[in-house]
Length: 301
Image 1 (cartoon, rainbow, N blue to C red):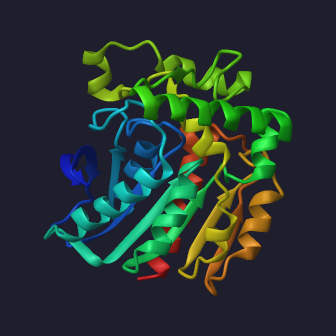
Image 2 (cartoon, helix red, strand yellow; image 1 turned 90 degrees about the horizontal axis):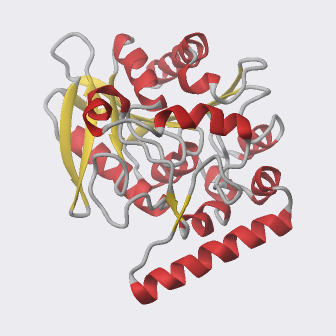
Image 3 (cartoon, rainbow, N blue to C red; image 1 turned 135 degrees about the vertical axis):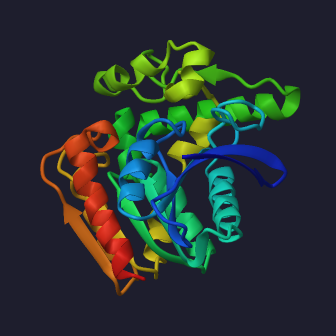
């Protein structure tokens, strides 16, 4: 694994490039994870599997998060993540050990939304994989928050926080989990995330990452107000969707989004009854998904 520093619109980002055996040039995958993730979480599990399968796999902290720069801290901007993914693709394409004609994208959980946008903007990406997608749509937002009225309340709260930031420079924060005003309200989600919260910086930089249980309050406006469906419908490159009955967004919405995609080369893999967090760190589930991803990417080269 190689530690990589690169720039995205003048902001320094930090990533880990997991390299396969051999001198290359290697085909390469850029991986984007769940909401407010850091590179040491779910993306690293996929990166290690894909590197063993012969791919150079790149995970990084998006701006505002983890080791990467950018203010305010813990601001969740889909636009910034798309720009960061495009910068990562450009950085990899410029390396002598990477084949610039064989670049791929992988989105996990909420990362699917931003990899869809990046794939539509970068004509050099050969194929896309979407795993256990938390697809941002009005229906999914209502499902997660308890109804359309709760979505409106959350978006209004985010808009008010954005106005305050624009007027004063003060970035208000909400917890991601484990509080009545948290971004994600499910106790099961809190149970998975809370062990990441209390870690010292020295230990964190070793293997655990710099995840924080907070997010700028103005992020909610961007998260719950996004609708991935128009961009998903525009997808024309080869696209793999991997999902399961207990994964994010429920069992029907991902199928509907998949059917809407314009791509003539697309594949839906339904693994079974797995729940969302099995796609984050359960070795059996991650291995099954990664085998499908590797086979799909190889078929496009």
